[in-house]
Amino acid sequence: MKTIRINEIFYSIQGESSRIGFPTVFIRLTGCPMRCTYCDTAYAFHQGNQQEIDAIINQVQQYPTKFVTVTGGEPLAQKNCLDLLDQLCDLDYEVSLETGGGIDISPVNAKVKIILDIKTPKSGEAENNFWPNLKQIKPMDEIKFVVADQEDFEWAIQTMHEHQLDQKKILFSPVYNQLEGELLAKWILDHGIEARLQLQLHKILWGEKQGV
Image: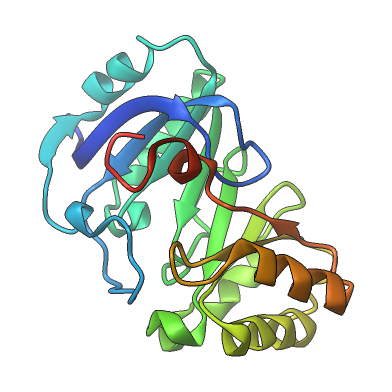
């Protein structure tokens, strides 16, 4: 049986993306090749246990929702993640995948809603963006920029123009406890861009902790 190293599986309110607010099962995989300066899930770098995919799905089925988010760490760093995504889709779950954008997303099941994080300069990982991924983005997918300051924001705007992302679903999120959401909102309005401001609802509700 195929296994995946799992950090945690929990049932909570989706705090990000266009599915914000919906009860969701989160499957957090262990491991990530990136080390973003503002990472809020560093505990997932190494902590976790191998679990069979059937056992993972059995846990998911205990909760009363059809929304499932596979996240990390970087879930695509484990090749068996693709099999997990396939099986969840076959069971008619509405699956989203949160990926750091440094690994090829082309093998991901077409039914999966991809939330692709483009790393900005202040993350320290901008050089590791896998730019061919942008050609793989489907209409239902979303592209996220986590912004630490105005330099990050201007870089994100330039990136949107260079890669013709204006017609894509764009998310802007301020680095938690580093950039005020009100200021990021002002920049979005001043630039007249069609993008969703997200403030990580789960942190507003419960603060910065695991399992939410």
